[in-house]
Amino acid sequence: MKTDALTGLKVVECATVIAAPLCGRLLADFGAEVLHIETPIKGDHLRNFGFEVDGINPWWKTYARNKKLITLNISKEKGRNILFKLLEDADVLLEFFGRRLGDWGIDIQSFKKNIQD
Image (cartoon, rainbow, N blue to C red; front, side, top):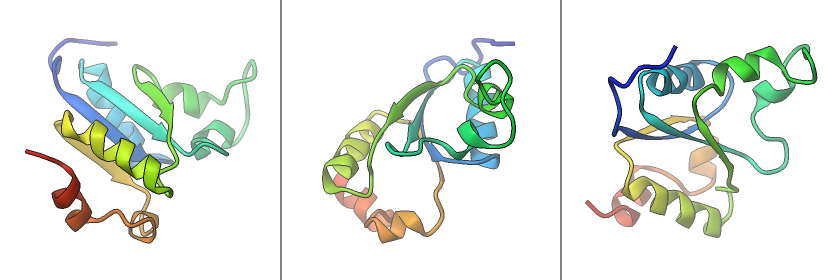
């Protein structure tokens, strides 16, 4: 089910597994434009979690619904710069990469430095 209640809301989702991707899916179901960012080599863990039906993991099919998907290596400076550029137009950042973001040099200070109001 998709409605237009959140049309115009732009969300960047840097998350994997269940909780944040479910939140992103619900926002997308209500009309938000959700851009899901995956790591380039393995993609989202849900793609390979458990079993497949017709070559697709049903968890992935459920949680990726109504989202736009891109791969981006945010562990590299070029990828981080692209992320910051995407966030300039975003209303919401959904993040669940845990400590890895800090390891990659992404924290609240880098957001303040790189994202213009």
